[in-house]
Length: 340
Ligand SMILES: [Zn+2]
Image: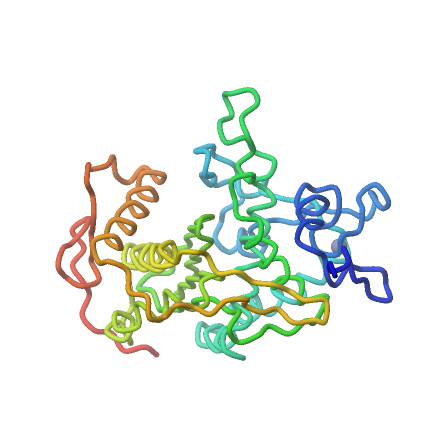
């Protein structure tokens, strides 16, 4: 028997939204993307939810800065918003933004401990929430803005995975349980500067946020495959503060590992309140090294070009600063620095 389209709580909020209904009604902005309240029923109760949280824009001084979208258009960070009902807006702030921003004000160590609580549950859900908002935002942007009839950016995304993100973010309302197998790779490292940076990838889904002295990398739909594949590399880096380029390299390594997982993992959220992985993660699968290098090289090439840092070299397969085999931008690896 097919699952019901919604299961609502006593306040009428959807704690469960079936995948196809989520895409038809929530992702296109006609209903709140979290509780499925219709905009036509409660227009006055709607607000604009910032894709990048306001406190983060303030801390990083980004209100006037621009971000490059996947269609190469630049958009001001403060204009990066999606509709959301006021109640969900406040609730998600309490769930994610308030504890993270307050913890960050106390100390870096405090924030690192908050992230590590309950097996990294908070950064897992928070990164899913940000990626979900980005995907919904991209549903309103053409892939090629100069062409009439060009499909929307969001129409190229894997909406089964994005529905999974919505189920993770919606646990703030539903209090559904996340099965331990349904989490993704999370990596938190210390960085040698306090720069802000945000990098995202929509296929496969991944996100990197550099803030103050910490860097968070999340690949929410890989069942921890990237983390296990790169376990030895991460062990070698333990206790080191990493440069911005090294963090970018790790982000591309994690994302490219997840990109070779074929077929993609399938997740489900059942009406009985469990978010689970339907398959098993093929941890025994070791991608061909040349294929992994090519996937990593393509991704790094793409992100460097998007930032105007690099004009491309045909056949780029691997640049690594982490192994000390090559240097890039002339930055030699720093000596070992103990973490405080
Ligand atoms: Zn709502």
